[in-house]
Image (cartoon, rainbow, N blue to C red; front, side, top):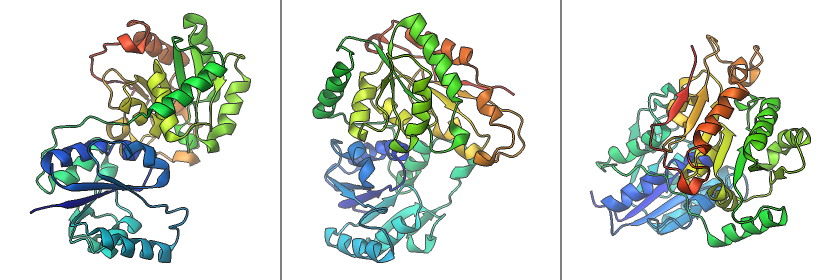
Length: 362
């Protein structure tokens, strides 16, 4: 089938959009002359704007001006004017499927979990089985239309103006251009994903004493309380940028960093997209939320994921005090930091070629 105008749709979270970026390049290779657009929520705009393989970015503000049924209806009808012939819906939502249908797009391919009757091709949704990585699930949508997916590199553009702003802010806080920094993200949207704050505190103190790197804390604005609690337990040399960065500025900061330490979160995938090594701590014994599906994709990244013996994971309603997270010790994570930093001490010289390490226990 000739596909001249293709719309990619992904309107969920930041990390999910990052993991969908290989779809863009694979499509461009398969359809070099086609018009390719990507529809995202406004807060993920920086992830796809500037991608050299895209022709257009379309913003769908489902929590703002497009909130509600009638606003979504009007958005879909207005989208008709763009005359897309193919919609690739990478994550199933009722609204995404409705919009593609209302836009009159003849070919609508996506997962069957939500309103499959609005799709022309509905793929069986087995994502929660967690048998492979989310990146592979997104590429399966392309494979369904016969597109070969050999290119799996994550791409996050970094704008010069964002780099300039980050460098200026770091300079104002005493971090010069040549200083080594480690960025730490101690928050998460769900307590079942948060390594204890006291562990982050002990780890940061240990890294600071042994390496002298400056530490930068980041988080979303909704996680500032967790970061504030951590900051109070640390020394004055900690730089707190929580809630201060746009997505583009976060990408610039992570590119500037020697290492990123984080709970399971979207910024981990941004870090991968700009080439920074990651140490990531996972909780929850659920296949669909495991590192197999959501782990970082960088070479040499280290992931901690402990099996605490729970038969059923109750997530944020955990009755065991999140013992899977508490099972990850400060010494283990510090040793992971040391194994990465001792390669040469600076990200520019890291040449880690081993496969991703996943630290687990039975």
